[in-house]
Length: 184
Image (cartoon, rainbow, N blue to C red; front, top):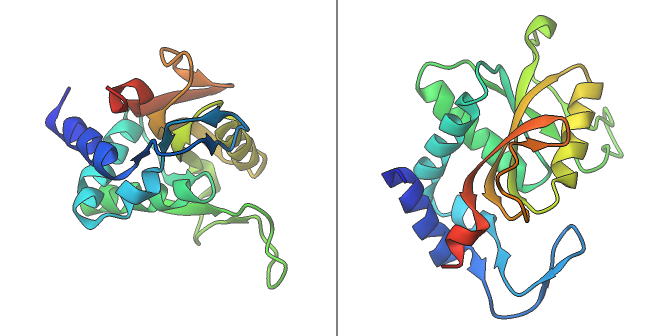
């Protein structure tokens, strides 16, 4: 395990692992261990560490032009990864996915920055925690319906039963940390 990953696991254990009650996950499952990645990603000293790891894991999928995040936590992760990539010579833009279309103005479900070269709409999707993968798959399918090519999905934490799977639905998948690493 590299030092950046080890440091992230430390931050997650310190700030994101909650074990003091029963929690209901987005999947509907109940658990005694909740991983609130937002507590780590919003913590100043952890931001650069996490942003660098997100960029590195996205790079495992090859070239990409855009990043997007599963609403809501994934949006911050996508912005962090784009900022880190751009600080190191990239030209990455962020696509914002809303949970539901705006009820005013343009009423868009997906915000795309101008100008968009429609020939290079390769996007990496970010998620904070994957349990079933359904939220990430739904967001990836929405992006593809809008003309993007989803190059892969990157999660901070994989809490699926089988973490050896390298796909979520039809999409490539990588996680920085396995759930089991946080509860030892």
